[in-house]
Image (cartoon, rainbow, N blue to C red):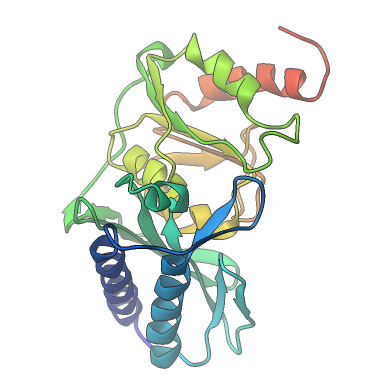
Length: 270
């Protein structure tokens, strides 16, 4: 069986190669199609996905795969790669230079390795379970902010924002007056990595897919942060609620999220 170092080397290589292809394609013409009212995909999503799949599948032929653009292959053994070839497609389609390549490796249902590459800043975040988190080879830790009022938070909104009442707007409004500020980057993987290295103090989002946060969640945990659902319960990559923080403001964020849950469910208002 391949060693962890071989897994990491392959994941890093695939992420770097795909990211550089995306970076070089920023100014090229791109084909855009829509999977929903606002949910789009470009030809570069497909090209990056094919590149990553081919690299990893050739290196580890018995592994399974799960990725955003319709890729699902059952594993023959205990390993499955979960990746997003272009996290931040809307940004990329508009030539807004904020997007990432996110690759995670799952072993018996547990994420054990994560790589997130930001090609526009040439920043690569990585973690192996039990071995810490790193940015360009340097160890990283979450922030020491212990007051939500002084916290810089990040979030995003689901693609069914216009149709579903469970759309994060109530949560967003509640945090606006309880945190120092909120940023909306358009890449959940980047948001999570920024929590891991202390640029953000907390992050929450609804209805993410496994490939959106699989790598980032491990990187946050290995950097000393905490990840849960909106009620503080255990987190799985299939969870519909994603809450990550430096750990110090986690309970405060849970309290604010409980207010938004009442509003979005049509129940008691604050």
